[in-house]
Image 1 (tube, rainbow, N blue to C red):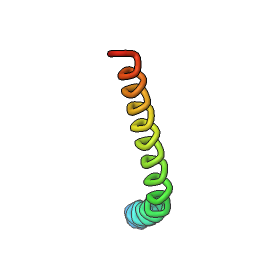
Image 2: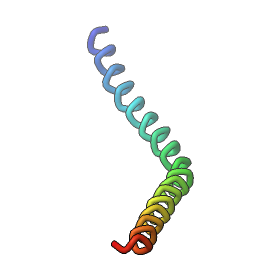
Image 3: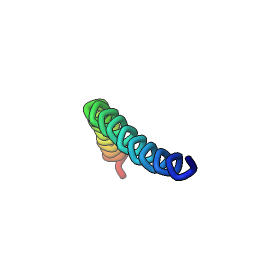
Amino acid sequence: MHRVMQRVDVVLDQRLREAIAVVVQEQTRSMVPRLREEVESVVRQAVYEAVAEELAGERSGH
């Protein structure tokens, strides 16, 4: 009985790892478009602020 439980434990461990990997992969795939939008927004805002600061510096003579 002990050997059977050890085998069950090994099989269960492997199957759980596979199931978790599938779920993580699916979740990651569904997050990519949202992450891309977020990165694009952050970059756009950073460029906007940098250009605004540069233009403000030029106007003040720096």
